[in-house]
Amino acid sequence: MTTSNTAVPQQGGSWVQTGPLAFSHSLAGADGAYEQISEVPTLTIPYAGVWEIAYHAHGNFALPSNGGVLLIRTALYKNGVLIEGSEAVSGIQSAAGFGFQSTAGQTFLHTFAAQDQVALYAHRQGPAAAVAGVSSGGDGRTGIVAHWVSPGF
Image 1 (cartoon, one colour):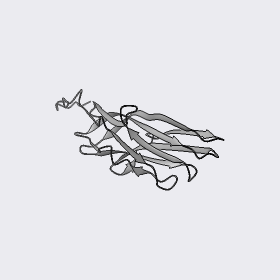
Image 2 (cartoon, helix red, strand yellow):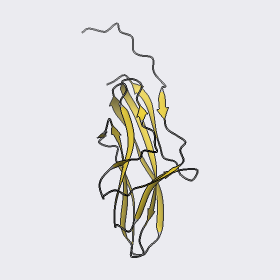
Image 3 (cartoon, one colour):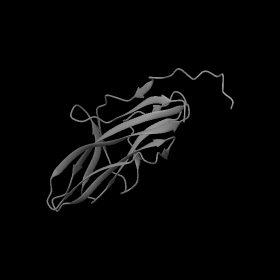
Image 4 (cartoon, rainbow, N blue to C red):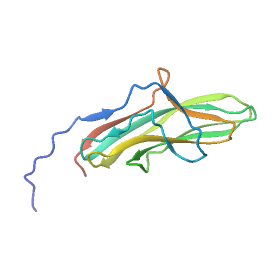
C-alpha cells in the first residue's frame, strides 16, 4: 500500500451562489425544448471536486379557460450539457381556467472540474394558450447554490 504525501486542498467550507434576483422569464419556446434562464447568472465552479448543488425555481402557471395540463420542467446544465438527476417538475391540471405557482428544485452531489459552468434551464409542456414562466422576487426566489464538499471520491 502506498500513500501520498500531497496535502489535501484546504477549500472546505467554500461556496458560490446567485441572487437575490428579481426577474420574470416567459417560457415561450416549443414544448420540451429547454432554454437557458439567462436572468440567473451562470455559476463558475472555482476548483475541482465534489460539490453539493441546490437550486430552486419559482414557476408561474396560467391555464386557458378550457383547462388542460401545464408543466414546467427545470434542470441544471454543466458546460451546456444536462446534468442527469438535476431535473424537477411542477405542474397543474384543470378542467376550468385558474392559475397556480410553485417553487421546485433539487439538491444533489456532483463532481466538477475547475472552471465548469453551471446554468439553469427550463421548458414548458402544455397547451399553446397556456402561460408558463420562471420568475424571482420577494414572493418566490430562483437561484443556484454550490457548496464544496470534497476533493473527490
